[in-house]
Image 1 (cartoon, rainbow, N blue to C red):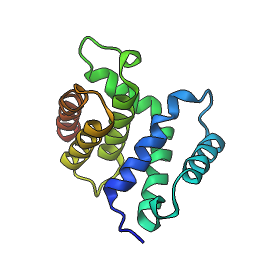
Image 2 (cartoon, rainbow, N blue to C red):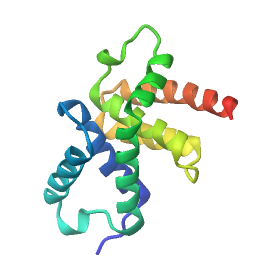
Image 3 (spheres, rainbow, N blue to C red):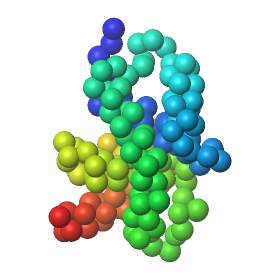
Length: 147
């Protein structure tokens, strides 16, 4: 069995959060169905286990439960943009990172930002890493000031 890291767990959480805009209703039942369908498409060794599986469920559920709050934070830090104009990859990555900054006490803000940037390099456009880094960096500083 291959070793799974928190980065792998983040990748799974991101892929599930990415699906949010494609569902008319995103409740606990839809989340469970989407997660089961997603996991069915993975090879046995790719599925998150143990603490990583718990993290994926916590992150996706947490982001889903706080979607309006997360999107409100993003909207407040977009300059000359609206959330509707955002690339869906960028939006999902920012939702995940902001969820981590607000709710995952064991994840330093810098790690949340850096991991989102790394995933943006893999899944986003050429502009995604710098854009995400800028927006999330500003959000991180604001959250730190408010604490």
